Image (cartoon, rainbow, N blue to C red):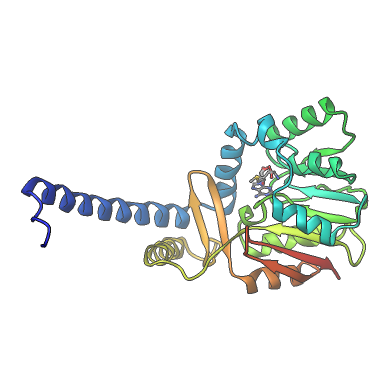
Length: 266
Ligand SMILES: C[S@@+](CC[C@H](N)C(=O)[O-])C[C@H]1O[C@@H](n2cnc3c(N)ncnc32)[C@H](O)[C@@H]1O
């Protein structure tokens, strides 16, 4: 027997809810499209850093002493020489440095969020770990780095650097601090076929940028802005090409657990 037709008020609720969701989505597209088009890379980075500066999670003990994620641990075991000296770019509050030290590595780091650099220095001192952590401007690498044997770009930080050219310059500077054949681990989010809304947002953002003339840096498919800042979702080929331009050969790529890639310095 078919179920009885829902009462009028039930139908009214469902109808209004559908309309509300549509309007919310539409405003989401307009909001992100407008701001992604209007904000410069420096503005986008400022939103990102402000979010990390205010984050309780990244400056808290629990996260920073939680160790490596399983995929990070497997990658370190497989590609990094035991006991070697690792440079952690975008080390945040020190999570990777602390975990690496516990595994017998030596590790140093740098980050662009002042509060997180303070956190990592304090935690490392409390734990009696000897490590240099430097404050460095966003999208950049400290000038005078001592040589290291391996590189980690801290969890998803690579995708927070706006623009392919800036990311490649970042990789090239990191490349200068390691000898050939050294490993690098980079993690990110991927894009697997943009949704209709993502597509609309991107086209709208491109249009707003075009109104600003040639001085506005072009956007790239996969660029996003939220109240937590800028991020870029990658296609596998993009990571491979950026690795190559940055002086690394991609030797491993995985999306099984969390998307990440491993490169080897050329
Ligand atoms: C998701 S947190 C990861 C922190 C730490 N590696 C961890 O796993 O807990 C990303 C880090 O990237 C840094 N970051 C964000 N945008 C950046 C940029 N444009 N250039 C360099 N570092 C950036 C932040 O300061 C933050 O510490």
